[in-house]
Length: 293
Ligand code: PLP
Image (cartoon, protein in one colour):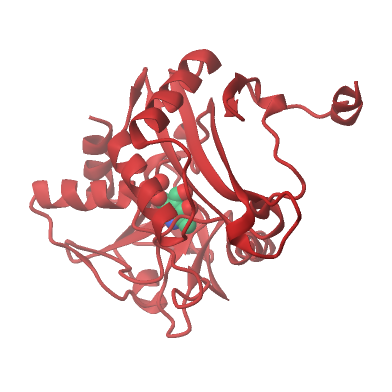
C-alpha cells in the first residue's frame, strides 16, 4: 500500500529486474536508502546489449564486471555463469530480446548497524533488462552528434580508476549541462593536460590521414572500443591508443564514439564547427557496418 502511494505518478520502462534473489517488474527494482551504492556511489556495474535475441560479447562484459568488482574490493554474491544466466532470464521475462539494455550491478550494500566500516556491509546484487536506448538514435545517424569539448576534467585516474566501471558521474553529468548551455547535445571531457578523455557512457575516436586514434588514459576500456579497434585492424586501418589533444580532435577528418548504447556513432560537429566535412566519414561508416555485421 505504502509503495503504491509513493509510486503514484511514477512510471518505469518495461522490462524485468532481478532483486534480492527474485525476478520482478522494474517498478519493484529498489535498494535501501542506507545502501552504500546510493549514499557513497560505492558500486560497480556493467551493461551489455542484446539485439534479436543475441547478446553482444556477453563474456567480455561479465569478465569486466568481475574484474571491476575485484579492483574495488566488492564481492559479487553469484558466480559469472549464474550472473550471465540471470541476465538472459531478465531479457526473456522482460520481453526485450529484440533490443535490450541489460545491466548487472553490485553495491557495497547495507550494514545492519550503519557502521562506517565498508567491510561490515552486505553486498547488493541486481540485474535488469529494459529496452535499449541509443546515444544517437538510428534515425539521426547520418546527421551525427554535436559535441561540446568541455573544460570540465574527467575524474583523474589516480582518484577513481576509470577502468573499473563506476557511478562517479558528477563530471559527466555537469559536462552534459555545460554542453546544453553551449548549444551542443553531448559532451567530451578533457584532462588537465588538454587531452580528450571520454563522455557519458562512451569512448571517443578520431581519424586523421587514414589513421585512427583513441585516448589511452583516463577512460573506461569499453567493450565497443575494443571491438572498434579489432575491426580497424581487421580492415588494415592503423589504429592506436594514445594521448589525443582537444586541438587535434577538433582538426580531425572524422570522429566517432563507441558504446554498448548504440555501437559506433559519428561525431560531425564540435562546438558548432564541423568535424571534417560535417558528415559521417568513410572510416566511421565502414567500422559501423562491420560492427553490426
Ligand atoms: N566510458 C564510460 C564512462 C562508460 O560508462 C561507458 C559505457 O557505459 C563507455 C565508456 C563505453 O563502454 P562500452 O563500450 O563497454 O559500453
